[in-house]
Structures are given as C-alpha cells and as structure tokens.
Length: 200
Image 1 (cartoon, rainbow, N blue to C red):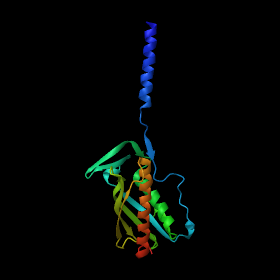
Image 2 (cartoon, one colour):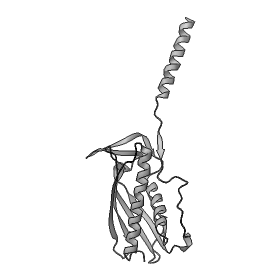
Image 3 (cartoon, rainbow, N blue to C red):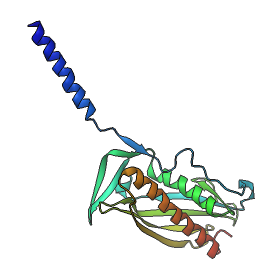
Image 4 (cartoon, rainbow, N blue to C red):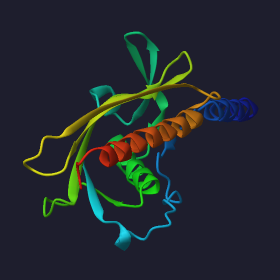
C-alpha cells in the first residue's frame, strides 16, 4: 500500500511538472526603453521653440494593454500573452519627443506640460487610426495631427500613413517596426512646423 502511495505521489509530481513546463509566459514590451535617450548635438538651452505634446488619442481597441493584430478586413485579435509595459499613448509620446528633437535642433519637446506664454510656444495633438500589425505581415500606422501656434490661430492639420512589410516573425519585431514608424510621424511634424508659420 505504501509503495502504491509513493508511486501516486511521483506520478502526480511528474504531471504537475509537465503542466508547469507548458505554461506560456507573459511578455511585456516598451516602445521607449530606458536606455534609448535621444542623442542630440544641440543642448536644450539652445532650442528656441517649445513644442508641447498636448494629447494623444487612440482608438478603443488600442487602449487595452494587450498588443493587437488585425486578422481580417474587419477583425482584430488581442494577444493573450503579449502586453505593453506602459499605457501606449505614454510610450508613443516619449518616442515622438525623442525623435522630434533628434530631427530638429530648434525644438524643445515637452509632454503634457506648458501653457501659452509667447508665440514661440506651440502645441500638438495626435489622433491614431492604426498602430498595429496585420496577420498578412504588415505594420500599419496612420492618423492625423493638429499643430497650433497660439490660442487664436487656426491649427495646421496634417495626415500621416505608413504601411511596411514585417521583416521577421514575432511581436518583438512588431514593436521595433512600430517604433520605427514613429520616426516618419516625427519627421512629418518637423516638416510641417518648418514649412508653415506655426510656432515661429
């Protein structure tokens, strides 16, 4: 009887061990890891125009912590074990701040801070329609931004859109290419500021 009991305990331990080995670990991703500070040749004191990232709006399906994949023309699937490490709008704002200052030696970028104190201060608001991968292996980023140079000035409205093939499988690569797509958004913002009288 004692031998049977020992055998049962051993079998139970083996079963539990097998179950534990099959558990899928949750993975968390950051668009802006701590060691990705922008490298700029211009000091912050030399930057004459202060740009405030006032607000970033995401569609409801991107407001969850799960990463999302588009599986069909009208179908989106949330990943079960892959999550953003911080609210996505915060991660996007951090990356845009870094990329804008990398692209322009004149702009000092702040996030959710500041008020209108002079004509040299401007604000930007962004609205995203897409910021996700597709099952067909593409990375989609699209939306629009409103750039305003003062309370009484009409905003400059500009759309942005990019679609690129996923270079390799895996959510880690998805995050790398989503971050890369924000470089194009930042370049569009800087170009819009330079070509218009906004923020001058």
